[in-house]
Length: 401
Ligand SMILES: *Cc1c(COP(=O)(O)O)cnc(C)c1O
Image 1 (cartoon, rainbow, N blue to C red):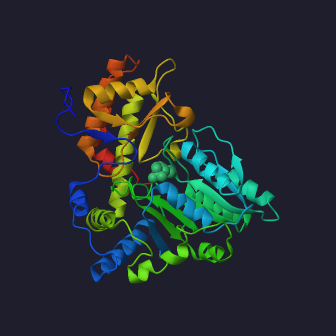
Image 2: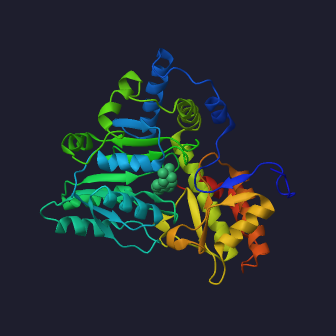
Image 3: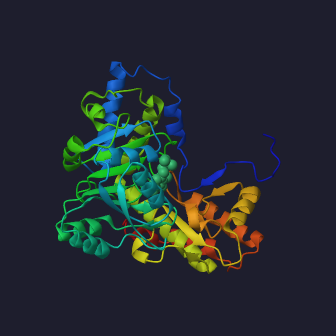
């Protein structure tokens, strides 16, 4: 393509909340020659990435890896554990929760969809109330999106687990961590989650193309009696992978090379606690910039601020997509669009994955210049607020969760 703008030199800034920037060394790993997925070299790779993903999910349970987008891993979670007509409860936290609900309905499940305002996460007290009221245990599953990527709101999974336990309800607990995994602390075992759903293209710093399920023993038991039709997604065929390293059908071999490299970076070099802290720090710096601009973050509860992205409201009468267009044309930076009913009302800054202080400063500078060019009323000084924060020891003290 002809380079028509002076902005289109140097690196494009990909600051959407997934797919995220892929580290060069991960790209190089992916570029290795494809190997025989039935051969001995592959077995070691398969075992290594499954073991690594268990550490990322913080689980000793089974992990399965699909050549799929995150949506496939959603379907795997539901179709492996539930039967036609089963009742499940889901929560309207935003666009992704709405899509998961649509899928559940299409698969033949009866969904109780609790309405929400797209500015809050799931309320643990409300879950306790709903489950306590369900004395006959008609609800077979509680499905929550951990980090709602359309709104920048993170639900409190530990507290939701406690609420389910207080209600003494046996429902399966399923959590979508597609945009939180390897960015925001998440504990599959400690929080007794039955199925955790993940994807490759966000915190894991890979291109799109891998879907994950972490599966508890309770979910595996439910799988034995579950009658929704399943074939491609059936866990049964995948169970051996952790032990033998082999997959039942052709895996995404080269993405697994990339995953091995990304796991090395996340687990062995930086370490998950430092990864979580880095994301918390960048999220805090971003919110300080937004406050200094005099704009509003969509997430209404500070306990639920997302560490992987920030959704920002533009004032009434202004179009967030026009702002994004101006920023793309002028500064070659992609920001996340408003999804579903937030279209035109918000833009989203992705600050997850392979990302550092100076990339954040560049990102916020692009936004501040864009606000100016788009004529959106704001105060200058957002970048300064973020720079001041990042440059001070204060930023080292941000709690990781
Ligand atoms: C990105 C995302 C999805 C969808 O994943 P795909 O890979 O696009 O299928 C689902 N849920 C959440 C929370 C996401 O961020």
